[in-house]
Length: 453
Ligand SMILES: Cc1ncc(COP(=O)(O)O)c(C=O)c1O
Image (cartoon, rainbow, N blue to C red; front, top):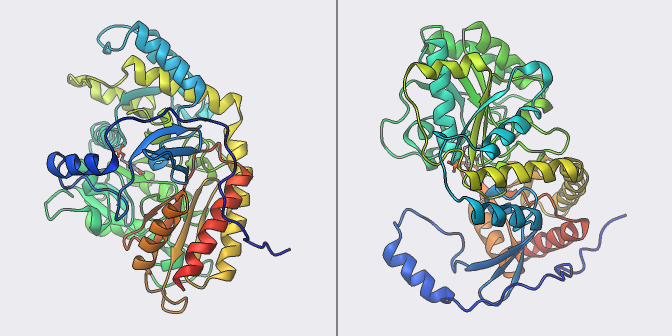
């Protein structure tokens, strides 16, 4: 039965936000313009001032409620200010706010143990180095790979995003995220499994997944023949939710290992049950990496990253001193540990599969109604909607994507956009989102897209 898309009204919510009496939006904007580095950008022509959060909702300074369709930036796994996390963090802050890894602390040990139990039994992925972000974790993962293999070259994928530090900017392969600086030392970029815009102009499955097989040529032509690592997101997030064919990673991993390289899975967006069907993105593709990089959803919003690997790989770093002042601090650790406990006890991944499937059906339905939508991608609660001016020409509809973000915000829905042309809507809400929220989200997009055309 076709849906009516009649109303775009936020579902009721009983939570009462704390009254806000701080500086208003205009004052904060003025301060920000004067004192914050101009490269720190905001969304929206008139940026919003967010002052309260509860589960899947956010409130601005005027008390207006929004459905957070982007989960912070894919950081909030189980809900903004989840009561169990708030309680655990309050208790920890009251007891000990800071210590470092030069002393023993129970929480880092317990969290590392619990994390290890979430990896496949036979993977050997048991030891973790905690950091504060995804960029730091990717830096560390490539360092470990280079040290333990003795090789230098790293292969990442075009359209991938791995961070904003010097090394990770080199592995990121989207021009809009790169400065004209020589940051890509020792990094080669292979072809992504981006079927909607196949880099080889082929069609799946008759293509025989040539994009993946091309990694062999890349290694043979552009490296010494021996590489340190291959790094990729199981589904490219900032690149516009690009999900390669299921056999893609098996083909690439075999090639990489035959050339002495390790495989790094950047699970910063895909991990912790967001794909619904599996806890880790790599499991969806039937492969086991040598190193797993985490951040964002691991801490439900805490500045927390991690690298988990096999002991012999991690041991490569013991030849010198290495230290991270805030990595493993007790406040981030309790936030990560409690998030993981909630993910398990509330079976959050199963919910992401169910409600994410429902959301994807809605998006596919919208695609039938609006020819601005060229493709709907992703799985679980990591979904993308690529906008094109015409379906034949696939010209990126970037301005329209900007307009949709603005229109959705005005109606109480926050979503993101990504891809090298910024024309893919990114819908990645906290995993506590309900079917009623999904109905609102779809109604809202229907109205906003309809208003454009
Ligand atoms: C897949 C992926 N890797 C790494 C990063 C970098 O993480 P951070 O911004 O915490 O440094 C991001 C951030 O968006 C990401 O999406």
